[in-house]
Image (cartoon, rainbow, N blue to C red; front, side):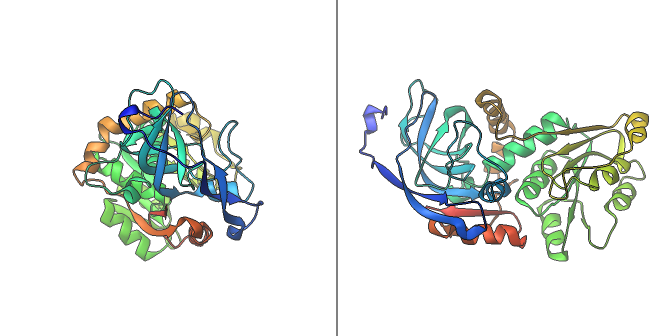
Length: 339
């Protein structure tokens, strides 16, 4: 471990970390002891102050989303804290820097190794618990909405699940960048919260037809981009409320992995369906997203135009309670763990 000479410190040999003792319900998450991570070339070691809790963590706990080769089996895809050691070749960060980072695993722990290109400075005015809930959702929204679906100036966005962590990030990013944003949510409280965050209209999917409302809001034209985390039978309904040349970006399949769609609709109106999973992508790809976020989005956070939404935070040893809350679907925004 290469610790910078100007701020050398003695680090422990072991740490506390949340382990998935077996696939199952939230109670399979237990606090255990693990060896201290060693930063590999191009990585930094972060003393974690807070970690975000995300839906993929729940899927991993259930045995449905294994970590990619070489990644830690400890859950957790985003952290915030202080750099305490540098791997070989790292020059972009120094010991003592306050950072948040996207990781492929290992976040539910006292220390976590992260690729240097996937780290970002904690935005001015934020504390670590706020910064910890930024990377996973903001990286995901940027790459899917702005890179893959190419949301362009003057275009409209429909977000399915507007009160989720992904949803509140997408609402704020797109509205802060000047787009009209519509969302779906399942309760009046969640709808109100989404509109307060910048959504022009929140559609209660339990009592309204989101496709009909979206067409009405756009004068019959339809929306340009849909961020979809439902899949299943939503996809064909979404095609019908897209504008010509519209795009759907699928990031999850909470409503099912199979869909029947009208190919005639796609051909006749030049529609596109795309999708992606961020976790297995290479470091260089994620580093490019980090660079775009730092240039385009981090100033909006520092100015207060975008703000992290932490619904509730739990101590590290209560990770099971955090997962139970995630599965209850009663939260608005993000859930965090404090270390």
